[in-house]
Amino acid sequence: MSPSPPVVELNDVSKSYAEGDAVREVLAGTSLTLHAGEFVVLLGRSGSGKSTLLNLISGIDQPSRGTVRVAGQELGALSEHGRTLLRRERIGFIFQAFNLLPTLTVEENILLPLELTGRAGPASRERVRELLDTVGLGNRAASFPDRLSGGEQQRVAVARALAHAPPLLLADEPTGNLDEATGKRVLDLLEEFTRRERVCALIVTHDPGMVARAHRVLRLEAGRLREEARP
Ligand SMILES: Nc1ncnc2c1ncn2[C@@H]1O[C@H](COP(=O)(O)OP(=O)(O)OP(=O)(O)O)[C@@H](O)[C@H]1O
Image 1 (cartoon, protein in one colour):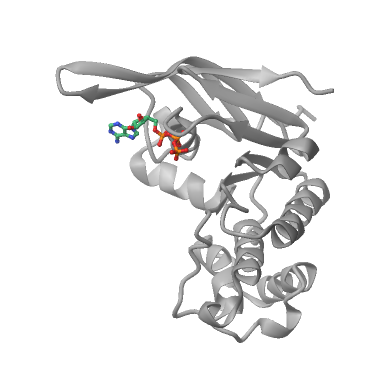
Image 2: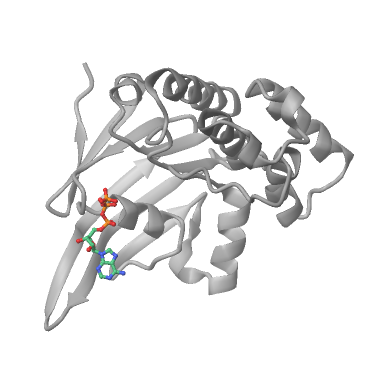
């Protein structure tokens, strides 16, 4: 059996934006390989290109140069529709602002990625129930998101991001809106899922707890991505 490809491969990726007559290079020749089961933190000042990098990996945005592969698929070789499908099937997202759908119950929110990938059915409902128990919200399946606290909503968002068992999780400041204790609980869950399901997690954060527990710490600075040495 051939080994599975890296979950993410960036090869000499640059990204520039036109700024009037000038061109602003946000990423300059970035290469990166991420593997299954890695818990990776991405640091960088405001405007350093963190969201740009996540958008290139999820295929929402295209590089000016270089190639991006996710689960062995080169994104530039896919149509827009192909990239949308790959995003739906292979990537889970968590945002700072939770982004749950307010008109769906907690259970329906988590079921959504499974429905979108054509996997609704009894096994999916079982998976949703299991996920709800793991995030400690087994008794809130029928609640609407606005009845939950911020921490509870983010736990639902963690379950939703991982419902369809994607190999890659992208998270943008997932604990940014939470107090320290609640943020730690969300971090515990993220870590548990990453380990249990061998998900590769790439997390933009300033949370020192997350940095301390990461397997790898990447920093974006002046268009360059560098890996920080771990103690
Ligand atoms: N669509 C766009 N058109 C022009 N410039 C853009 C576009 N998207 C991002 N930029 C610029 O690229 C740079 C990097 O932005 P990006 O949002 O990736 O930074 P960030 O590190 O995520 O910042 P923050 O932490 O504040 O969210 C910024 O200078 C921004 O103005």
